[in-house]
Image (cartoon, rainbow, N blue to C red; front, side):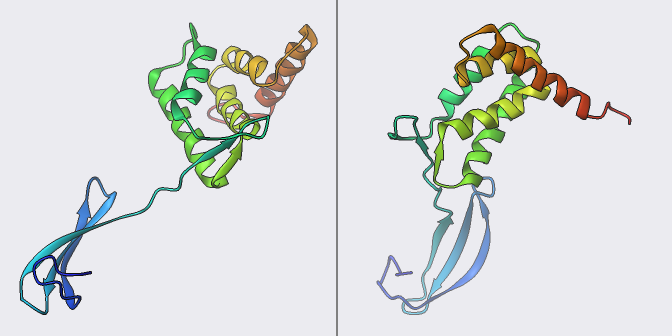
Length: 158
């Protein structure tokens, strides 16, 4: 790190602490050349998330688009704002864990996995768009999947 006063690269850290809600580290440094103190900040470089569309195009991940799709599925359903925000956050974190480029199908699967325990009707609504339902049998198959998941999920207190 070059001293902003004299340009020397000889310095040492005299104090470090968290900054910006633990998203950065603030370091106080002492220049060995001129004796002046200066402050630096370190931040983790966020990984750019990309979405691979069905037609092969690659676009930046857009949290607002994911949120809009989930909100549309939950419209008129008893799903709280807190649950919606938490689900969108979980999906974004899931995409981040999968790496830099994620297919839209995988994002849809993450959303559907998160919606099923929140609200079955919203999950079926979302699945109808995400999976491109074309006939009533598609809805029946999704409802069976939802019922099977409910059977396998233990009741609270068990």
